[in-house]
Image 1 (cartoon, rainbow, N blue to C red):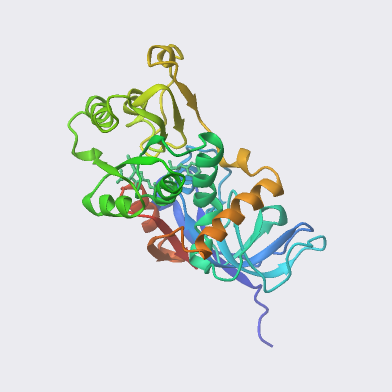
Image 2 (image 1 turned 90 degrees about the vertical axis):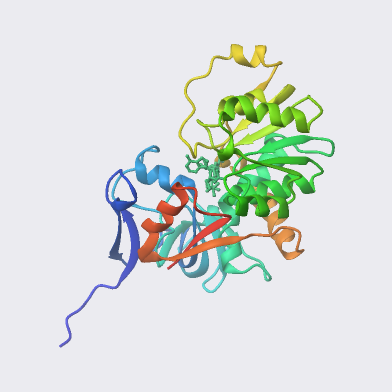
Length: 335
Ligand code: NDP
C-alpha cells in the first residue's frame, strides 16, 4: 500500500523580519477556501516594494509570512458563498499576502475578473501598481491639461504607468530616473523632460533649480514622490505656489517627521500621504478603476512593461534586484 502523502504546494515564506535571505521556498498544505474565498492557481505574482517592507519588518506582519500582494491566475475552487466567479475563470487581485505561491487563497471581495485580451502577466501588474497610478492621477491630484508634474522613479513599476496616465491626461511630465536605459523608458512613456538624479552632486539643491528652469521659474503643480527620504526635500522645493506633494512611498527609506510650517514658507503647499486601500474600499470604486485600466490595455493606450521574470525559487533575487534599483517596469514571479 502506497503511503498517503498530504497534497502540498510550493510557496515563498519570510521566516522572520530581515533581508532577502529570510525568504525560503517551502511546501505548505494544499489550501481550502473559506466561504467567501477562492483558491487560485497563480500564473504570475507581481513583485512590489511593499513585499520588501513586509519582509524586512518596516511594515509589521506575523512570521512566517507567505509573501506576495498582487497576482493573476485561474480559479480552481470556490467557497460556498462565492457568486462572482467559478472554477476556470481568470482573475487578478491585490491583497496583503500569499501571492508568491503555486496556489493562493483570495477573498472574493478582492477579485478582479480579467477580460479577454489582457494576458496573465499584464493582469498581474494592474491590481496594485496599476490601480495606484490610477488613483494618484484621478483622485489624489486630478491631473489635467496645463499641469506640470514631477514623477520620481519614473521607470519603475508604478512609475511607468503613472507617467503614461499623467501624460495622457494632458500634463507635462518631468521625470527622474537612475540610468540612461531608464531615461529611454520614461521618455517612451511620455515624459517631456528627464533628470538623471543620481548624477546630481546635491539633489536637494540642484533638482528644484532644474525643475524651475523647465517650468518658467514657477515649479510644478504636483510631485508624485515614491522615493521618500532621499527626495522629499527636493520635492517640496520643486513645487509651484499652492502645489501638492503626493508622498506615496519610501523606496529610499521613510521620511523623518516634518514641521507643518514648511508648507507655509514653501508657498501654501499641500502634503498628502495616500494609500491604495482607501481608494478601493468599495467594490464599485475597485471595479471602476480596474475597468478603466483593462480598457486602456485592450485599447492599446496603456503599455505594461514586464522588465524581468523570476521562477518562484528565486524570489530572493527578485527582491535584491528591486531593492538595488536594478529593475524597470513590472517584475514578476512565475510559479
Ligand atoms: P519601483 O519599480 O518603483 O522600484 C523602486 C525604484 O525606486 C527603483 O527602481 C529606483 O529607481 C527608485 N529608488 C530611488 N532610491 C532608491 C533606493 N534607495 N532604493 C531602492 N530604490 C530606489 O517599485 P514599485 O513600483 O513597486 O513601488 C514604487 C514605490 O511606490 C514604493 O515606494 C512603494 O512602496 C510605493 N507604492 C505605494 C502605494 C500607495 O498606495 N501608497 C502603492 C504601490 C506602491 P531609479 O533607479 O530610477 O532611482
